[in-house]
Image (cartoon, rainbow, N blue to C red; front, side):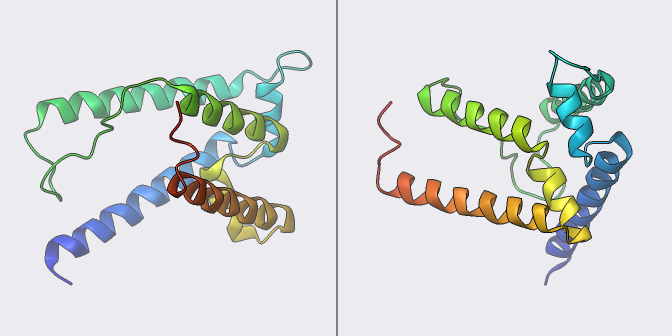
Length: 148
């Protein structure tokens, strides 16, 4: 492994560890807290709004930095989203993500972090998440999703 590849691995591990620590510190690993934030009709818990605001600020600062840099430190170019179209696929996927998040109280990042606890419900969630990704890839390959 060359030096740049090793730095990429270290950067990815550090980024993941910081992200996981932030998820744990903020309460995002607690499905009950997440559902409390998403359920505005009952006992709404607004604390995760501060987590969201902090994430938006950090992302905005990161994007401002990316726009000022000529190229990244550990790659030849930035890999930014190229598609800006809001279509049925995007809306349907966003709705499915939101419904699943609201029902279970987990999204992919916290679910992967919670795998370390070995809870059967989390293992089942992650297995279902990967099965859904595989099904999407099969449908995408069959061109069933390409009809906008």
